[in-house]
Image (tube, rainbow, N blue to C red):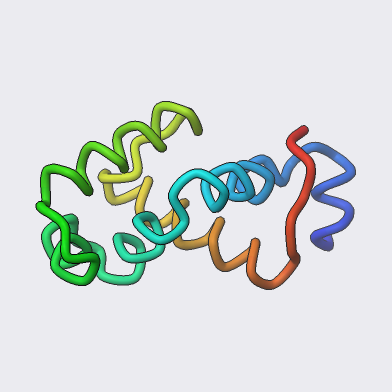
Length: 92
């Protein structure tokens, strides 16, 4: 099944959610997803690790997933990658 078919069937929820994620705190999320570590992301962003952790917690609540778990990290990475490849999508 292609990406457009998945979108049409409502199966691209993470991609659509990534639009919201990107609007909210793309820089923090991208830093975390690219490093895989709250502390490394904080160093990259010149922030305290608790500030980055709080941002990720708030983003996760809005998206309905916990970004700081291994599966949440993978979903975040995939959503950001899909967003970059596809471009913005409307929320289902």
